[in-house]
Image (cartoon, rainbow over all chains, first blue to last red):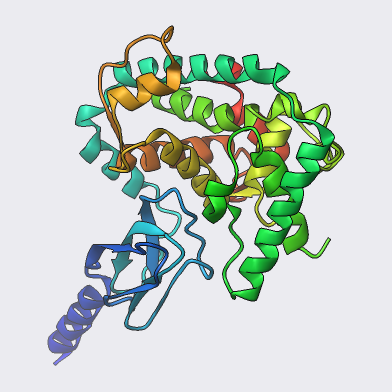
Length: 187
Length: 141
């Protein structure tokens, strides 16, 4: 009898500590539309690979409930779920595995070359220092950013000036984003 | 710092630096400088761009979104891969020719590593000082 009890205890322990079944699901908000992707989220959800330039902010442009994951505002990403609910948020091994899995075409040599290219781009952008906008230009772009923030709030949208990217360029982005963020915060 | 991290460090600073020249004449310049008490002007501006909730730290979520924003600027055909032609367009005619593409998955994994490496006190967010050390290209190359 004692043996049976011990065996039952072992089986119970094994079932509790069995490897969790992780699942990766891609969920994409296209054209800014909200999308719901049914999946078992019992053990939690983690955004493992963001695909979109549009923001993916939990509770704002993505989230999940018991039956699935939702995305909105152009957020496109791959999400990892895990049944069983073990603590895995701080586990960086996923990134190592992920990195190894995809790194065959992205060798260190290529990465160095890319770094040099981006360095050149940095120098080029620094060379544009002389193309400074006037204060009135700045104010105008700031105002447009401010109006965009108010418009988003009226529409019940999340805070993300990036969705207005057609309204600014590299030269005017700072003024636009400053106006957007200031007016969003009510300042 | 590993090469892939160096790439990301350069990317994180590249776009915000375009605003550096504007800063001197901008009426809002003091705001950006006040938000990020550590680092030089370029990294302060970059910090202000990234700090979406203005809590004076860059969370992993803020960091990832800022970096993906830059990724998206380079990824002209929206296929989630930085291709050789796109990298060449970014670097200009005088930049060295890239030898291979870089995927968004590799980008995501590498920026997470860069973030974790920069988060010296392991509190899950980058302070202005940690941010500065992470994004400055002088540290990356």
